[in-house]
Length: 187
Image (cartoon, rainbow, N blue to C red):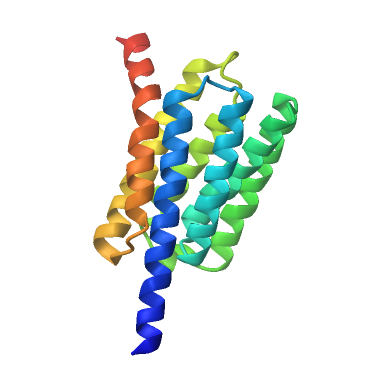
């Protein structure tokens, strides 16, 4: 009985911690200047928080997303060239997908394919410099975020994983801006 209460308390603490990470990320994308040092620092803190929550909740796809985002943000903080960033992100995506295949993750959680498509698209969005390829960047961000949101909502509904709702809300929020940009350019 005591162990169950302790686990529930731990779960609640990580959920609150995840909400703080989500709020920081949404604040960064909504109120801070695009690609500013402050925005990158806020994103770094948010990603670290969300990575801890994903790990504690044993959510492999969410961990993979946060690892790729962490690599992209750290490289952006150090103003590493776009080619180095894209190469590092591509290598990390290949390693993470290979790991998920090795542990037979998709056999245990078939909807993980949707999450993987989402995190690969988000990785492309982070790896592509917005100045040179804003259309590709917007496409990757909007559809990557939509795929992760769908995956998170399905995992929340099917598997009752409460922290997934954090990534659902976060990715819906992140999809809006790039999707609006795409619609204005394409229509």
